[in-house]
Image (cartoon, rainbow, N blue to C red):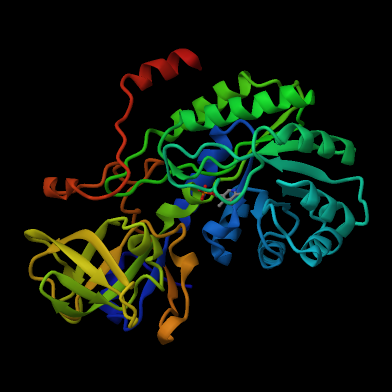
Length: 420
Ligand SMILES: *Cc1c(COP(=O)(O)O)cnc(C)c1O
């Protein structure tokens, strides 16, 4: 991968014709080490958030030795780029061929499911293996999350005890429970509530779980979505764990995706046309801007003039909306994105915080979508881990955006000190 000290250097040297992903290995290293240090259990990276080989390699180099995979392709990817690491196949619906290949060819022993049928399928496809770690996926409330992951997966509370018992009887290794509170979860207490709900089901089943897997959902920081400190999430999980019916040997796992990678990548796009307040860019909803289009998230932006006079644009800002390069009208990112008034065709817009579910979502629709990756040495546009200022500067008038907005509870810092 080519390296530039700053995004401006890339613009100055290349004025790139195609969108370019600007990746920051340090940002992944820092978040990985933060989770290893602060989470009191095993950290498994949810590969779907960003399956780039450099992400998997950087995580492995920084102590993340577990990966949450959802497909055979992801299993093969991790086997290639982080050989010897532990994998957990946490998609509750898998093909028999994928289960067999994961187990027999790649040594994957941990599988999740939310029905008796899937449990039977896992047992069949592994030749009734006795050395499986069997994880029951619970359905939990997704209150406080920007994206729910409960509508599709998770056994309901009243059916969970029966499935827990079946899992317990089916293995001599670990039996566990998992859930997902929803992605970009803005409330630390959502984890505690999900753990309480899971604990009640375990009590009704009369079994001890060997693994409590609190899933993903750890937030990143976007304009209009400034979450509480990450330490508050860890503290809520500690409290939840202490209140659960667990034994001395019960393991605690988590599966962060977004939080480990969101900060790491920004995207350098070029303005192909300006129509009033609308900028037509060379990347969009079918490229790396899925969330900007479909969830209408107003990602942070910087802008640059290209060519000989290359410089970062400054000056008075006004709100812009973006259109992507394809012919589909869905290819629209309403923003608002605050950019200098004099931005024009040929200028560059760098869109930040696209490391999670950004570059991972690219398609080839309409002949677009090929994105080159280069490394840069500057800080992310915002950070949960102290790499950049925590808050994203936003003009006051940008307040009325349609994104999740939750106030921060007061006096947390003091409480946290007492608890620990
Ligand atoms: C997507 C997913 C994750 C990661 O979620 P984030 O919100 O990105 O942290 C973790 N576990 C499972 C099972 C998932 O499907």
